[in-house]
Image 1 (tube, helix red, strand yellow):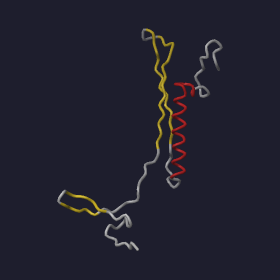
Image 2 (cartoon, helix red, strand yellow; image 1 turned 90 degrees about the horizontal axis):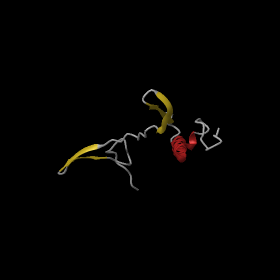
Image 3 (cartoon, helix red, strand yellow; image 1 turned 180 degrees about the horizontal axis):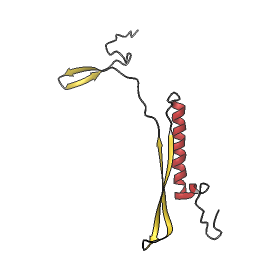
Image 4 (cartoon, one colour; image 1 turned 90 degrees about the vertical axis):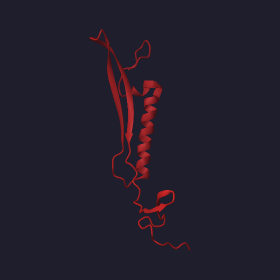
Length: 118
């Protein structure tokens, strides 16, 4: 509902996208799209993907006792399951420059597995 005199909007779900020149809406859309893309990319991962919008309301008081205005800000956060790779066996080797690891990209579970490079 718009104020007829100067375009002031009633705070609500239908108008919240107008805060900060659309920055909140753009960030929310980006986070939602990333969650959907993550689901498409890793459908076997059953963990939830979440997008949260958190609003903080702080009273503005005159002489600490009477509140006539409120400051608000919003924070968009998202959570995507972490990527866990296939375990890879690493052989520990010591050389003149210290300890390092070796692995076999053709046999991740057995670093010493011989491979046929036809």
